Structure formats: structure tokens, C-alpha cells
Length: 493
Image (cartoon, rainbow, N blue to C red; front, top):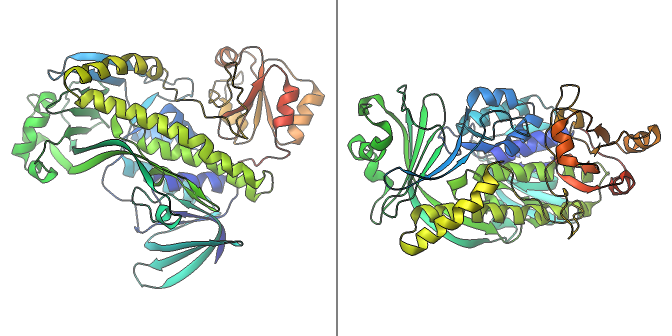
């Protein structure tokens, strides 16, 4: 059997990569060792940049039905008094979605699997163990074993995406190693269901306490999560009994009887900060937790995997379709690795602000507050580094590498509805018919700012070339330069 792309792992990252590739018409096979969605809750947060990716898959409305808008982040002292607050808008922001949303990961995975069912180019095969990956000049060979029958087979692929988690066999197959970014803590994770109203601020509470750092958040109409740092000698099993667990969550549950609190899950996790030393070996790529591990304190772990998927999918579709050179794939690690490292460091900063005591802890908290306040209010993450597909000047400041806002346009549609997964030229002036035809000949959409206040405020008086993933490839005053930077033909979803 031969397919253009094999995706190892059917978690959110692998499913998103498959849906994006399938939308570009790329045939791919998704392999997962489990027969169906893993039922336990894990990731619980997405920001509006990542939710925009789900919007491109047509899942925004369905995701809204299973999610809960979050009002931001508070740092609290051990007595739950507010040290600092970083609000997020529950209404549609510059990307057309709540700036922070809480959800249950199995619900999201069911949505993504439903999206794959509508794509004739994507096949999902569960109950399949990947036992080896090799490469030669003709492509990659993926050795698989059916877990039910023991039958073995080889799948030949042009490219392999390793979306197979923290213990990634794909990472081992290419000889990549995880670099330790020097953060490792054991935490207790508790999921509770209750119809009682806890009457708490509808955001994430991060308790800065040397003795027992903690996190509280509402993730749904009747679902809540707590995380508590485990002390030396403690394990998750110590808190499975309700009488041991209830004192930890009582500061938030108040007078609600323990009998009215359904324990969905109690588990011990080790929060780590790690980054793979390389994300690619020829035809094999690493995505998601296979490439990076982020402590959960800013809710960017799973989202980083979806960012990987949207960055790589359109490039891979272009290479397979002959509209981009194979060298375009080099930009994946160049762009995504520094961004992931930046988000990991931000999460580690919050983790240390919560758990460090004494003068060091006070210093970290003083540093964390101003750093986060400016960056958290608009939910924007750092710009991508320079690459062959981010023509970012060293000076002056440029929009290149940043996301174009999913702004509301004159006709009532949003930018992504018009761009439709192709390149787009955004300009403050109306182009001539000849200019418009030249861009359209190369498969690009032309968008004028018109009366869109948000788009005009973002762009100013110039022009920008926006990639299929929403990232600005180049910006400037002249559309002539943008035309030169545009590939000759582009895939369109």
C-alpha cells in the first residue's frame, strides 16, 4: 500500500493535520493504536488563534456548543487574594472567537473525527501499532501490526508525520532527542462534575503557594478542574478517597456537600518542559508532544500541536502538488521551534511564579506580571522567525511572521471565509484590473481593507501577502514586491 502521507497518532494534532491535508486534496492515512477516542479528560484550553484553525475546518460553531468561554487568568496568594489579573474577552475578538475557551478533550476529538468522515481523501485506521519507520530515496516505509489479529504490513509513504505523543516512537525512529528545559514537577489533576453553582470568577485561578500551589478552572456547564502540586512522599493514589480529596477543593466548593461532587478522574501527572533537538529527518516530521512538552500553566500544550499542523499542512500540500519546492519544508522547524520554545518559557515562568518561595519567588512574580499583562490582554503569541516563507526584515518592525486578523469585512464575511486556505493579498488601495488578474493567475485572493476598521487599523496604508495558514509572508508599501514573493500557483482548500 502506498499513500502520500502517513500520520502516526490520532490525537488532536494528528486529526487536525489529516483534516487540513484532506481539505487540500492530499490523500493520507492516520494510524492509531487505540480503536476509538481515549475517554479520559486531558487538555482543556484553546485560545482564539488556535480556535481559528478549527474554524478553517468548519468546526467553530460545533466547538462553541461544547466549550465554555474563559475570562482570563488570575494569580492568587495562598489566601486566594488576587495578586494580578490578565483578562480575556469571552466575546469574539480580532479572530472572531472568544480569546480563551475551555473544553473536554474527548469532545474535541469526536468533532475532529467527524470532520475526517466527510473527507474521501483521509482514512483513519485504529487498533494499529506502528513498529518501525525506515527511509530510502523512494520514500518512507512504515511497519504496522494489527493489534487484534497480529497481522503485519508495510505502508509506503512520501512523508510521515509523527503525532504520537510524549513517548513518540517516531521521534525514536529518527534519532531525535528531547532537550530538558529544566522544569519538572509532580501534580495531582482532579476533574469534578456537579450541577451546583460554585459562584467563582469564570477564569483560571493560579494559586502561588510554596507549600501547595494549585490551579482551579471551570471547563464546562457542570465540569470543573483542579490541579495541586504534590508534596514529597505524596502520590495521586493518596487522594482517590473523597475524604482526602475534599479538603483540597473545599476553598472553591464551599458549602456544597461532598456527596454532590462527582469525581470524574483523579490522576498524577509530571509536568515537564522539553523540546526535541530536531523536528525532521528527510521525509519524517515531528508534531505536537512528539516535538515539545509544555507545562499547562498557560494552556498552550495542545494548542502548540495544532499550530504545528496548520504550519506544515499547506506546505506539504504545495510540495506534493508541485506548487512549492521541497525546500519549503525546511521552514517548518525554522518557524515553529523558536515559537514553541518561547511559549514553553512563558509557561515555566508562571509555574515558577506559583511555586517558588522567598525572595526568588517574589522576584519571579514581579517579572511575570508585567510580562504577561502586555502579552496576555490581546492573546497574541510571538511572531514567527525569518524563513524562506517569512520575509521579515531585521529592521524596522514588520507584520511579517504575525497572524493577519480574521477581521470582519464589508460584505459581512470574515477574512478566512474569503481567503479560503489560499494565499491572499491584503491591500489598503484598490488594485487595478491588471494587478488583480496577475495575483489571481497565481491562485491568490485579493482583499481590500475597505470599511473594515480592524483590517485598516492592522494594515495601515500598505499591503501584505498572507499565507494559507493566516501568517503574513511579507508586507510593504508596494504590491509589486508581494507579487514577486508569491509562489506561481497555490493549493486552495
